Length: 210
Image (cartoon, rainbow, N blue to C red; front, side):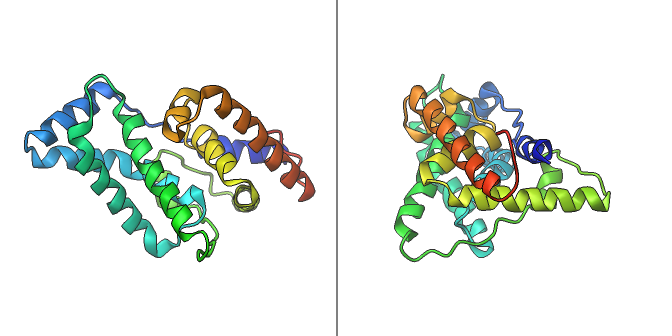
């Protein structure tokens, strides 16, 4: 079952077909009062930030929409500071991650951790369609539950690196920029996060090779 669990990690990666040029054009249009342009950005990035919020593991269902609105509001307000030639994906992701991390720090003492449920509609939106075989569904559900529990049990910075790199599919360079870390540190934290997850999974009888 180790290969099945690893497959679940890989299937959760987002393959965002991002185009820096297309994003830059939308930013330009938004700044020049094109009301529909920013809506296109929201449509494109909502699945990405939705998944990011869920995988951080501290958001209740009731607050996800509020968090998304706050992230997009902050991106919109910051658009005048966006510089041509930068990656809008990385730039906006940094804003989103900064907000999420600030909320984590703010709510650390009073937060309640809720199970992260896989949203099938979001999976379809992101292009991940699963077999309807009951036994496969059971295996997937159990794999997700264990992986989610393992992530929640890991050190926050390790979880952040693992989620960005292994689940969200960011490159090492993008992960480093978003988290304001050297690339070497990202690689080190990714190695440590894998070790923590491997230990947790082994203790729970999943010999996963992450």
